[in-house]
Each structure stands twice: as C-alpha cells, then as structure tokens.
Length: 512
Image (cartoon, rainbow, N blue to C red):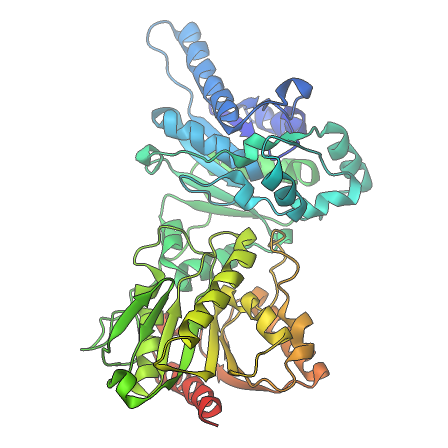
C-alpha cells in the first residue's frame, strides 16, 4: 500500500487536503496530511523550518511503526511518497534527506527547486513579506484574505467559496519557517522525483523543456529519466480547484509515470580558440578581474589610448555556486573576446541575481560594475554600451528611464522584458516597458529569437509595442530559426550572422 505524506504551502494545514486525501484513499492508498505547526493554530507560532522537517520525519517513522505492528518482526514497508506544495517542498526535502532509504518518490507540487542553504523566503512571491521579515525575522506573517491570495500564486479555478474556505482554514505563518535555511545532503539525489505543474501560473512542461534545452546548466538534471512531469490546467491550489485530477496525478506519479524531458544536445567541440559551446572562433586576449568585473583588453593597453567598452550583463536567476562561474562561461567569455577582436574593451559583470527577489541587488551590482569599468584608464568613459541577456533584460529598467550621456547604446539578446506571470516575487519596479519614456534618444539593439518560448516572446512583443507608442526606435536583429540562447542551441550560419550583426550595430553607436 503506497503511503502519501502531504505537506501544504504557507498558511494552510492538513484540512486543505481533505478532498485529495479522500480520492487517494478510495484508490487504496494510505494518506497522512502533515499538520505543520503554525498552520494549525496559535500553538505553533514559534515554529521554524526544522520543526516542520521533524514533523514530516515523525510521519515517516510512524508508518514504519504501524507496519511493524501489523507484520511482526519482518514488516513489508509501505512505499512512502512525499508531496510538497509550494513552501511544503522545504520540509519534504529536509525529511527526505534524513530518511532517504524510506522515500520512494518526492513530488514537487507547483513548487520551486530549493537547494542546500536556501531559505524558503527566497521563493516567497509577496514583497510585503520580505519587507516584514527583513526587520523582524521572528514575526508572524498574516495570511491573505480573498483576492489577496493572488499575491501567492494564480487563483485560477478557485470560486469565491473556495477563496472563503482558503481564508477560513488559514493561520499566520511563523517567520522562522521562512527565514531558516534548508539543510540537505546528497542522500536525496538518488530518490526519484515528479513535478506537477499548475499551468495557469505560467509554468508548463514545454517551458521547463525549453529551460533544460537552452537554459543554464543547473537545470539539466530535470531531464533525468527518473523524473516525470504532469500538468494541471488550473491555478496554484489544485487541492481545492481540481482535487480529483490532483489525486489522479499523484497516483500516476507514485507509479513512476509522467512526461520525460529530452536531454539537451551536446554542443560541438570548439575549434582552436573557441571554447566548447560558442559558435564563433574568437582569439584569446588579456583579462583582468576587478571585483565583480572581468575586463578583456585589446593589445597595447594604456599605450594605445582609452577604448570604448561593452559591458555584458548575464541573465538569471542563477545558483550561487554555479560552475563554471558566470565570467568563465563560454557565452560571456566569447562575447567579450569578440568585442576585443573588434577593437573595444569587453567587460563581463558577475551580479548577484540568485532569486526572484534579488533584482534590486543585481541592479546595484551592475551600476557599481559599470562605474568600475568607466573609471579604468584604458576605457573611454564617455563611450560605453550595455548588453543584457535573457532574464537580465529586467535590469534594463533604470538605464531606460534615465540614460546617462555616456551610454551610447543599450543592447539585449533574447531578453525577458517583463516579469513572467509566475514571477510574483519580482519587485514591480523592474518593468522595462514602463521606463521607455526616458529612452527616446537612446539607441536600442534587440536580438530576437524566432523560436523563443511563448512566455518570453510575449514580453518582447509588448515591449516593442510600448516602444513604438513612446517613439523609441529599436534596431531588431532577428534569428528566425533561433531558440533562446541560440549561440549554444543553434550553431548555424544564421546564428553566427546574428551575433556579428548585433555586435556591428552596437559598435556603430559606440563609434558614432
């Protein structure tokens, strides 16, 4: 008999699973909804993440005790499936790390992918909670009411009665459950996993596949054949909006079913002077690391006089311990070398965009790095361009709103130009289209991937419409057959031409 242990998201406790639990039991499964302290009443007000992990561990151990009681000294242990919804994935992962030998599967139910050392607060979408806990990490976080639940996820599929029930079941969330870091071990790496995506929030299997195929390396593990994915066409609380469909998906997940993702294609080996994964041969050049910036320098140094510079700003969010480091990643390393080969300084910034809440920090890092570049005597401080990639596109906001005189051009490749629907944690300040009023005289160069994911493509289309309305001209470099991060994914003549066309357009504004 499969045993499901269900851990809910913030503010909610065991009662939110009632309909799902009934469906699972009707199919012959054992169900133990976790009564996480704090979500069950005032007695849990002092709980922290560790207390919630211990509660899930206790439930696992209680199954073993029951099995032993039923079968004497040689129990046939029930397979244990741990289900974590939203915040609930943190205590689930913590418990799985301590009882990995007893866990048959971990199910991520519309949840993030926290890593060792991450605090649950990093995945909280409500900016008000961050503000509250930054000054009072032990504070009780009041639950939302009515339409306020939209700040925590899509409410698609929830009727007014559902929202009333959600509010009635809710209790304040102890701050320490969100601020205490999650501690994991490698023991959970061998545990099979499943993902159930609620598509009304904007996350689909196709979007995850795109991330695996063309995104940063840390997502490639999602193509492991032991991982199955499911979609539910509803919002963030399927236990209320689609309980029977969710029960069915959980049973299928426990059986090892689900859609498998295709692994990314290996990039071809680079030719001499071309690191693996880039599509052009670019010569090596001197490089200096100054704080968060790597300066790639043309031959001759200061003796040749100050040169214009292009500052390359990576996307994200990216993990803190990404290897290789972003400044050594072939994409940015080679863009900088290409700039140097054409006579200008190439600078690569390593900013701290590690979570959706980090955009203000990343923006400050970029601004500081730009001043580091401009203050170098080998750089012409009055001729600088900024070039943003992917999720870094949101960081264009301040530069569009008030472009300094020395900023000769702003470029962006396959950028995200508005927060995605599920990115509720992003500071609302970072909306580039709203900042276009300041960019009427700032040259913009946008490289657009024709096979971009629809969610990102929609942000680009909306931005271009806003730019037209604001009278802002945009030079567009189209890659009709290119995917997101086409430099790695599509090493074709079309892609090579697009990189060179974008670089020539930026250089023309630097030299003009």
